[in-house]
Length: 366
Image 1 (tube, rainbow, N blue to C red):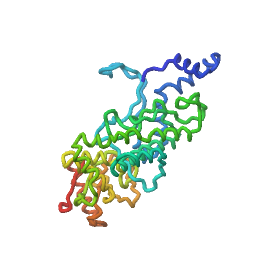
Image 2: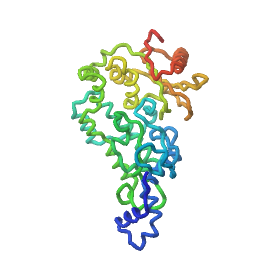
Image 3: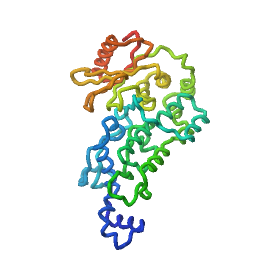
Image 4: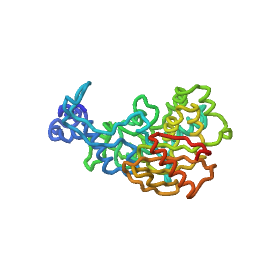
């Protein structure tokens, strides 16, 4: 972040029609409020202190702030002395988050215009469900932020996903954010101080993805790695034509918010990654029949598989450095109880030792 001189703070106070005689007494408070570096640091510090363990994955991990960066640390570009240090989020499977279908989800509201757009566009049922899932996942992140008393201030599509990345990772860039303080602010998100409820409603409306649905960008993204004919076939074919399902095992590098069935929007990049060398339509067809799977989570450490949980249990895995494994088991296999747990423990142990990111297991090989 560049330095924010007192001169800029004084100019901002002048634009707010603060009496010139009062400005010298308000400079320190103005710098603290208007400096983008302080805004970002306040938001991440607040998240680190007050965000629940489950919801921490909605945002980048915060490692602190630096105010004395040496110019020698920069190999190129314009050197700045101040920086916020976050985890290295990349458009890579290791940075992906799994958001699970919560056992007690908070009701997400879709506006009338949003629902109308979904019904009027020529979208396949899968596309409609994916856009709903993506919207719900984004609202979940945004609602968590609002519950902590933070408003983002610049809700844009690209603040949920990295540049040139199609899938969401985390909600980031809090340089325009307002973090609750008992002290009355000069401004809140480019406007006069106003109730959090009003600001939150406005931010939720800006997440509704009309432009992306109209452009059918999901279909365009899928076609990049396949063909238009194959993608349309996978999107529209009757589900009763689907063949026997396989066991799907996936490595997840970050703890999910809930240990239950993943949302469609968050699981699709994992299925794409796993199926990239298979039939290009495989990930679409499997994503369309997620309701035919049950999810079982495992966590492994160096000494083996520590815990396994089903969607009916509350997992208490903690936030450690264990490797999380998501198993999607076809319901038609009819496996349950001790037999299923023993077989899955062996499969997960072998999978973790292999170092792979995903595995597909046929019924006859399980």
